[in-house]
Length: 279
Image 1 (cartoon, one colour):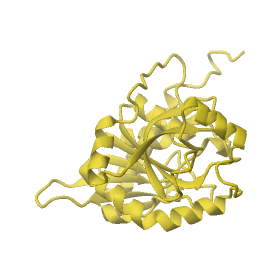
Image 2 (cartoon, one colour; image 1 turned 180 degrees about the horizontal axis):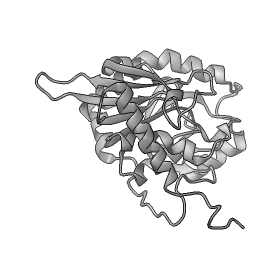
Image 3 (cartoon, one colour; image 1 turned 30 degrees about the vertical axis):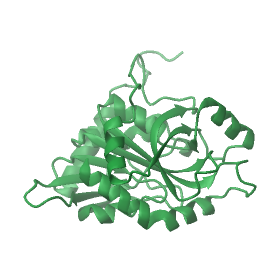
């Protein structure tokens, strides 16, 4: 049994996030950011389309962040001045290209650190993106999908102790409506996070479909829970990079995910930049 003396300090993750936010303000010269983006596979080009990059910082220079361990994932944190209407006050986006996944053998504190840092940096709206497998054959690779809800099958939570947070409207209906104003063809789906790093078996994919899932991946849900806890309004967007196991006869590979993201990148990055300007 862990004694009270040895128990982890529940305030420590938020103190570290505050340190990271203060370091970002020092390195970027931007005291407060308005919106944050976590860019998953295929979405990285959106940062270049939002506006002028004020600063780009190697992730490991900011307390609590690390270099990515997966090919195709970003390694930096950027501050971007968002292009807006003439006369409108400047707004700033914090672009978190460096994402920590639960399968990296780090704890949920590390997974949640990015969104907690965003909140400490003044952010009010958070955009979580990912590349994922699609359970619906109609969702062909390259299709962007709005996340309407999620199912967390990691067996973990970023919240500690008696921390009770309502997740009823976790993914903002308001922000999804804004996204559909930009692209009325956007469909919605339920994202299922599994621990990874292995891809799911066909039986696991059938299980997630029976549970109500339409998208499956290895990120996003834990971050969304942590983001709701710190009061952020959340928009989730998935890029279907492959059919999930058993949906297509073709074997799965990380190379396929990267290739699909690269092919869809210019189109979905433009879409995301338009959405962010409106929120």
